[in-house]
Image (tube, rainbow, N blue to C red; front, side, top):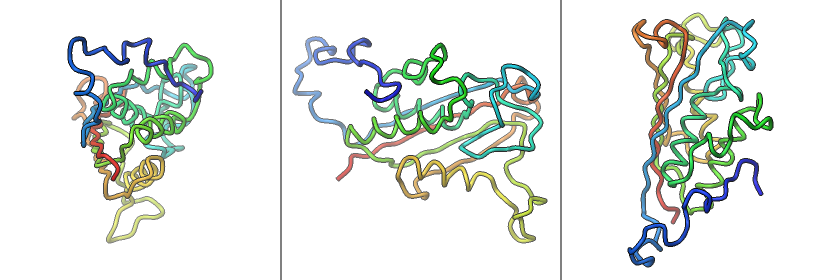
Amino acid sequence: MHAGVVDERAFGLHAGAAGALDAAQWAQEPPMRIGHGFDIHRIAPHGDTKVGGPFTIGGVVFADFELGIVAHSDGDMIYHSLVDSIFCALTLPDIGQFFPDTDPRWKGVASDVFMQEAFRQMDQRGYRVGNIDVTLIAQAPRMILRDHPLATAERPFDHKRAMIDNLAALLQCPTNRINVKARTHEEVDAVGEKRAISCHVVTVFERKS
């Protein structure tokens, strides 16, 4: 059994769960599925004992950022939101049921593990990525930097491009199927006050030909 795989029967996801409807009506997977995922984490100074490691978003490590993510795993909210959107589209239990924060196996683990399981579930059901739209909401750190060592006068350095590359590699799809955008929270509420960071993801699957 793969790490984190749940028994679908324990959640009522079994033949006949639709009641009186003819089972043949549900035998064919639809040509497209859509899922939404959301995640939010508190962020705190690195001296906080609940901060699990370096600040990581979309697989990109912000080693010089003064705050860390409070989470059981590495707290990568792009990966967590995306995993939840995949499970949602497949009508599976959420990420917290697959990988509960009460399980010591997931303490400090890189969220690549969760992404790999989400891809396995998607692939096993005969789907591939149609497109993915990510909205990261964070007052800091900044995603686009003009003073980054790899920036040029014509082209500032954009961390989101590396995030897209990471997501495409984990989900085995072209980068042109993935969009990552970021916005601040206009200094409003916990996110705007740099006490939290959040993310929304919408995922569309298409049947593999």
